[in-house]
Image 1 (cartoon, rainbow, N blue to C red):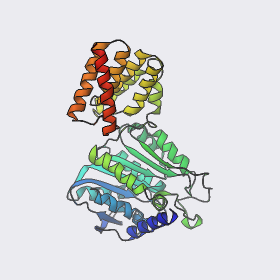
Image 2 (tube, rainbow, N blue to C red):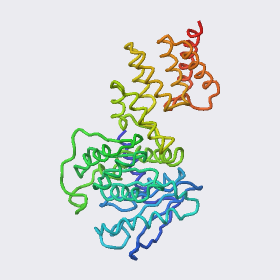
Image 3 (cartoon, helix red, strand yellow):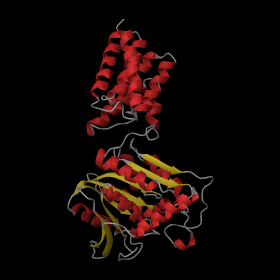
Image 4 (tube, rainbow, N blue to C red):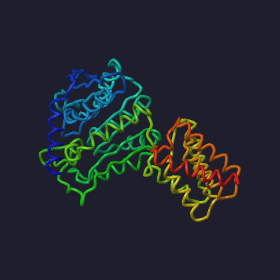
Length: 397
């Protein structure tokens, strides 16, 4: 296993040094400063992604990921931030960096085949994270997805993440980060974000790395060991694929959306288990869908579990309200119809049980939609079919 990981890490480094199907790009910042970027063109028209590096690396640290993204259908740009890599300007001239990021974004959006209204941003370290969040704040109509690795942002950025309730965000950090307290900064970002479709990738360790120095200063003071930003790719070779899949979901399959996550929906799921919680949560869903008809505030399966728990302890009325709420959120789910049918039958409401069971079976027969938002295996479909058939048989006696 150790040899395999070393081989994968070496392959990733070699891949990063020789990016396929890419070209160097010379850009000019708003104040005339020359900026250097690399463009990875996708084989066909599609979304765009801009990747920003951490302060102790340059654009090449993203090359392996960028090449994978391009192969998956994303036109991708990696940028040397002002004063880093091959870009001109003074390192640490942070007031100009938002304009520099906008220059790279405008270049990306101007390329043939790039859908300029479906753009993703990836940032590593405090530098990349800060300016990715700031760019999303400036361009809310265009930026549909964020990947934030091992960094932090200021108060304006935290407030934006809290207000951007429907922006999908992937947060990645490692306890072995050599620049603590990055771990706690990332947890703060995750907690501040209000999107129910946010996702957390947390690489745990026995203990946090000790504090040595700042990421913003002399990088030579802190030996890199694969715990920070894009360096994590070498220790966790599966991470580039996780990021590719995140962008596939949020920029291609369902632009600007990702499945709701149980951790992200923790407060709402807790509220749902309080007296009157179903009514309050339903109102939240109704309000959210006034601005985004596709909004999902919780994962279907988590609310299924809550409803089943109520039913198991004999609180059938509460179970029915929970299952009705889940059906409102996921009307194309045969699973949700079957759960409600079973609860109606347990409550003696045979006509409603029959109607829901028949609907579940019709949806299974047509197979125009997956069984549920979380599963569509033949085994699971067979189980739900059996349950719905049993409910229907008992409801028609």
